[in-house]
Every structure is written in structure tokens, then in C-alpha cells.
Length: 272
Length: 294
Ligand SMILES: Nc1ncnc2c1ncn2[C@@H]1O[C@H](COP(=O)(O)OP(=O)(O)OP(=O)(O)O)[C@@H](O)[C@H]1O
Ligand SMILES: [Mg+2]
Image (cartoon, rainbow over all chains, first blue to last red):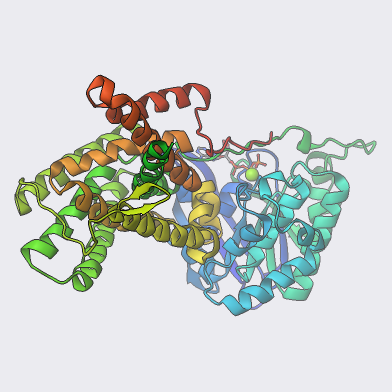
């Protein structure tokens, strides 16, 4: 448990989230992320992982969702009434599920948008170099329209773009989605390196529990809008129920993959 | 042949003034998804303010211009904050109707404040045309083309390269993702209207100088629709090209056809083009198809 740590970087206490004034989705979720830690948030389709992350980043409001109970504190300050732009300035950036790169902007322009909340041209240049250092593939792609690079590269753009805001905490929503296993490994390794070298704390929402628990130190398992289990990453990955239901490993070691169930589509949001 | 080029070149210069007005329209549509039916009235309002400052208050141009630009930027901000922001999330028709209403309010307000009779905007531009290779170039048209051109080049630079410009394009592309990276989307909306106000101010001066300032000036806004449909509703270069095409086509057509039919070609031909364009390329020549991955 992390309770013996000093004060957590992020603490979510007993939040309730309602969409459209009537749909109760989170029913009292609590979790903490320590300074510089990686925490996994696991659960099946519709468990409420993305909703939890959006409650933290403030993006909930763009989807007519609202935190109706509980509190979210970042370094001891309440942030759940803030808009996303302010949350980013505080040092929390969400990398949304489905990547959401700006397809019509080049890869480099995408990265530059990440530096929006910081006004310093000099350091922006340096941060670009840092991103290209972690994602060397993006260097060759910098002038390409982001809509036309591969899915893995788009995920790198999305993470790199978030990095440009110099976050203290990155909320990563299913970075593995729709990617080939090798790429997933590559991206998780980079996330782990970012955490180690840059000290960025990560709250990682994943269906791919096997991968997530390899990089995380601590894990929470969600089901139906509640945390049903939490503990050390190792302990979770050895838990029999978890093995069965969330790691997709049945007794004989067959794999069920949730990745196959999901697909995503993105459109311009002119009319919504 | 000289006759043709004469019509064509002067048409292009008029077209640059359509492009200027169209740019404001496209910018608002692109960033905020609002189809602004009050763009022409915004231009008219700019013309009225210019005429009032120069003629009524007799301010020198060097003073009047900054005041004009400042007030039109402010007007853009106010309209966005006061009228359109509360409409966010409402259905498309409601928002369109609000802009139609705004158009009438501008007309009424301008007439109330400064009277309905036609005013002119005196600009220090010579009347005598230049003749180059037998083409008669009116200095007013040249000035209009230069002002529009400089504004548009500056704008395109801003839109492509500056931090705010990139933020505007990002917002136009994916609003939620723009919020996720910390872009202040409300600021982007307000800025789009402010820039549209700025373009309308320049358009008001140029068009007002050319055809006089009264509520009829708002009719230039009607030519914006064929221009932007041709170019693509969401395309900045499209606004430019669409404006130029409309200007050139109406000028050439008026020169050749009007003598036979007694005039009026200018008024409907752009719309014929618009209808044809919609049938052939519904998203315009520069508009973007949606990139979609499933
Ligand atoms: N905008 C919304 N309006 C109404 N209900 C929503 C909205 N977004 C999500 N929900 C509902 O909230 C529940 C949790 O959704 P959420 O996206 O948080 O799950 P998730 O754990 O991220 O699932 P996935 O693994 O599929 O991404 C689901 O039942 C979903 O239908
Ligand atoms: Mg999700």
C-alpha cells in the first residue's frame, strides 16, 4: 500500500460521477498516486476507467459528466472544479483513449500544441528535442500530417504531445489499444523510461492488465464504477481471480483479448 | 484580348476583397462551427464606423484607422462572449437563426446611430487609372488588392506558424483533444470572432470606399457564400481562391454578357457557380474530407 508514503501527489477520495444528470457511473471511487509512481487502473469495458481519468483532468464536462460527490486533490489542492486548461497548468495531462491526434496538423505541430500552456519559445525547442529523443521514430515523421502516420506513431505523438506540457502526472488511457504486441511493449518501455528519467508520475488505465502490471508498482481493479481490489502490482498479478477475469488467462493459459472487442473511430467534431 | 484581361485583372482585385470578407466567415466556421450569416453586416458596420470617424468626426485617417480596427475587434469579442457563447451546445438551426437575428440588429443599429443615407469614405487614393499593356487598372482596386493581400498573408502566417494559430487549427480539428492539451478553447473562439471583426473592418473601409456606405453595403456578404462553397467552408486558402474566382467570373461575365441582357449578370452568376460546385464537389475545392480510421 502507498498509505505509508508522505502525502500522495494525487488523491481521489470517494468520487461519484453522473452523466447527463441521471446516469450514475462512478459510485465512490478512491485512489492515490504517489510522487513519481506508476499506478495501474484495470478493469473491463465500461468499468469506469476513462470516466475516472476524465474526472481528474476536467474533461468530464465536455461530455456532460459531473463529479457530484467526493474530492480530487493534487498536491493537497482541490482540482475537481477546474477546467482542463487549468488542470494542465497544474501539471496533469491526460492522453485520451483513441489517441486523438490532430490529424490535419503535422506531427511536429501536434507536439507544439502540447506546449500551449507554457509560453516560452526557448524551452519549447528543448522540449521538442526531449520528445524526439524518447520517440526517435517521430523525428522522421515530423513534417507528416498526423492523420496519415501509423497507429503506433500516433500513440507516440499523443504521449509526446502530453510530455510537451512538462507534466508532473500523466493520465494514460489505454495506450495499448489497437496496437500490435511489439509496439505495445515498445510504448510501455518508453513510458517506464519517462517515469524513471523524467520523474513523471503515471496513472495508467488499461484493459491489458498483463502489460500494465509489468510497469506499475501499484494497481487498482475497477468493476461497475467501483474499486473492487487494490494492492501491490505483483500481488494483483498473482491473485487467482484477477488472473481468471482480468489477465485473460484461464487455467490452461489461453488468452482472451479485449483488444479484439474494441475499435475506435474519430471524426471531426464540427456538429456535436 | 485587352478587354478580357482588363475585366479579368480588375475582377481579381475585386475578388481579393471578397476573399477578405470570406476569410472571416471561414475562420469562424472552422474554429467554432458557427455558420455566420451576419458576416456582411459586420462589414457594413465596419464601413459605418469608418465613415463616422472620417466624415462625421473628421478624424485623420492615421487616427481613425486604429480606432476602427480596435472597435471592430472589440465588437467581435463582444458578439462571441455575449451572444454565441451562451448558444454553445444548441442545435445548428438555432445558432444560424441567432446570426440571422444579429445581422438585422447590426443593420438597425447602424441606421439608428448614423442614419440611413449613403455616406462615402474618403481615402487618399488617386482616381486616374494606370494603364499597363493596355489594361486599365483603377488605383482603388489596386489599393484594395494590396490591403487584402497583406492582411491575408499576415493572417496565413499567423495561422500556420504562431502558437495561437496552431492552437486555433488544433481546436478546429478536435475540440476535446485541444482541451486535453490545455488549449483555452473559449479564448480560441473569441479570437476567431475578433479576427473576423478585423477582416470586416478592412472590408468595410475598402467596400465602403468603392460603393458607398449604407445598409446595402451588407450585400457584399451574400457573395461570401458562393466564394466559400467553391473554396471549401473550412479552408483558408479556399476562401482566398474562391473569392478571387467569384470576382474574376462576375467581372468577365458582366463585361461580355451584360451588354446583351441589360445588366444583372454579376448578381446571379456566382450562385450558379455555387450550385454547380455543390453538385460536383460538396466540400469545395480545398475543403477537407474527413480522415477516418476504424
Ligand atoms: N458521455 C457519457 N454519457 C453517458 N454515459 C457514459 C458516457 N461516457 C461513458 N458512459 C458510461 O459510463 C460507463 C463507464 O464508461 P468508461 O468509458 O469510463 O469505461 P472504461 O472503463 O473506460 O471502458 P473502456 O475499457 O471500454 O474504455 C459505461 O457504462 C459507459 O456507457
Ligand atoms: Mg475507457
